[in-house]
Image 1: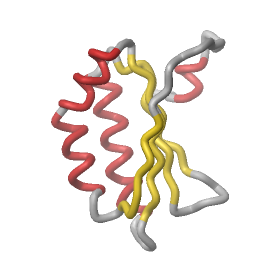
Image 2: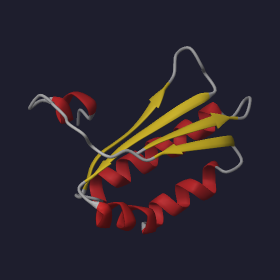
Image 3: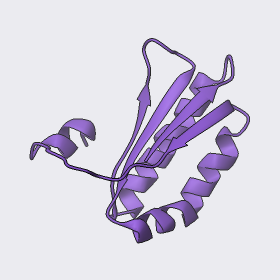
Length: 106
């Protein structure tokens, strides 16, 4: 799933602070959320892209019910002017063994 957020002028830092918190909580509490990443867009400073991969449909449903996810949505509402959610179905993939370590160094 890809979610594209358009941010209000002057609200990017607020969004980023809350996004950092939810990324950390997902990593700690959601073993079936296989990847959850928030990207900045260098060519569009008021845009953020959240990319998530879930083990299955149940993992997505559980993710959406998590208190930290609901709190994220509540706290960023004043920063976001529009969202576009793109649901994906996997047709094929390839990834290195070190992908998770590269994306989420801890």
